[in-house]
Amino acid sequence: MTAISTTPFSANNINYTPAAKPIVVICIDGSADEYLDITAANGRLPHLQQMSKTGFRGMVRGALPSFTNVNNSSIVTGVSPAVHGISGNFFYDAAKDQEVMMNSSEYLRAETILAAAANAGRKVAVVTAKEKLRDILSHKLNGIAFSAEKANLAQKATHGIDDVENIVGYKTPAIYSADASLFVLRAGVALIKKGLADFLYLSLTDYMQHTYAPEAEESLAFYEAMDKAIGELVAAGAIVGATADHGMNAKVKADGSPNVIFVEEILEEKFGDGFRVICPITDPYVKHHGALGSYVVVHINNKDIIPDVKTWLSLQVGITEVHDRSTATRLLEQPEDRIGDLVVLSARDVVVGRRPKDHDISALDGTLRSHGGRYEEMVPMIISHPINQKYRMKASGDPRNFDVFDFTINGTN
Image (spheres, rainbow, N blue to C red):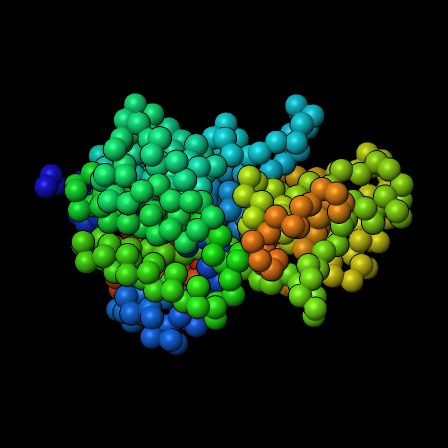
């Protein structure tokens, strides 16, 4: 096996000094801390429990909105949305007067840790469950990048690798399955063992967390299988850091029906026409959430009524925060030109949407469990190796999920 580069590198004004060991960072999509606690309490999380004892486990604050594209972009750049520019999975592009998916690297305003590591001589691989993330995560990357969703389509010229199914030893999984995430982890193990990568970012999917509560047997079995694969990464000599992009909560009423506030509808009823509500959670995976999350932005044609609309929305039951553009830019660390006139967040058990006709709740694969607001902002972070005194102090402050590369690389030296 060729020597692993220890050449220092930097990205977005943060310096990284990697050890001569494989580095693996995992984003356990949608993993609220209770998933780990409940699985561990059932004796089915031995490897992650051992990592917590010999290494580090704590809670960290994610980026808002607590959505996939936002937080994955923060994790791979090490900076907030205000810097990297990704404000959701979906946004209104005022310059183009179009509502578009924000899944292209053209929207990324910061360099990635992954590209910088590759330029410093590391053999970098990005494996994501969702194809929608691959373009952003592989921005300017000289390395391997493929998704579990379309693993069978990966080609050397475009993905840095081909014959993925044979390398991993598993067929391309269905995206709406536990296997989509497990394929990512198994791919990571295979890439390290075969000497194809020594610096990896593995991003899972939250289909299971959207569909099953932490105590469900399906969740327990999934986390147990995930724990086994993570144990194999550590056994292969890797320093592993794991965090989540966001947590997950049930968004239902006492009778189990979806607890939704249709913001565009109620605004039109109160103030008339002239509103455009954007749901940044919107993506191709409708069975996850039906494009309903706990964070929306509101574009208002008549700027004179913004203060009145803000005040009125703030008084609605189930709405917990309403911020104007300047406050959201500062308080929520948002890119000012990619949010609305108002940003609206909802309660732990509430989602906000546009109008009933804009959301196909019937597409859900179970009850409505979702994310996006404050109540999914705090997530776990686990490091496989002991962290040094400097990073123990940092952990006692306000660590972020997008510090995970910093902790995994610099904190274990």
